Image (cartoon, rainbow, N blue to C red; front, side, top):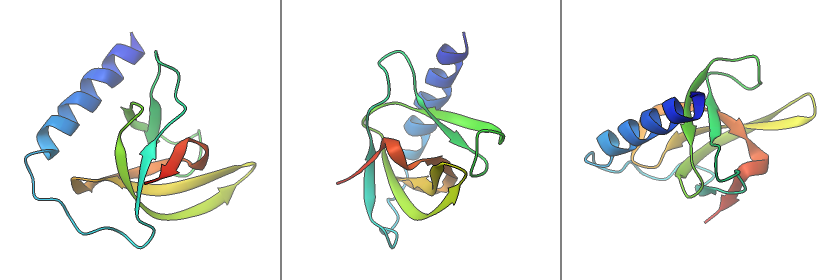
Length: 100
C-alpha cells in the first residue's frame, strides 16, 4: 500500500514539474537514481537520515540535481532537487545516485 502511495505521489509531482522551465544545473551536476528494487522507490526525505519524514518516492531513472552531501552515521546523505523543479528538495542516500 505504501509503495502504491509513493508511486502515485512521484508520478503526480513529476507530471506537474515536467511542464515547468528547467532550472540551471547545481554545483555538483545531475545524477540519476539507480539500484532501487523494482517494487520499491528511493525515499526523498526532509532531512539527512532515516528519522526524517518521507516526502515522496523516486523510481529508478529519476534525474535529480545534487546540491551537496553530509555524512550521518554510516550513510552519506545528499541534498537534491528534481531536475525540473528546484522547489522539490530533500535528502537521499548517496548509494543510489549515479552522475550523468
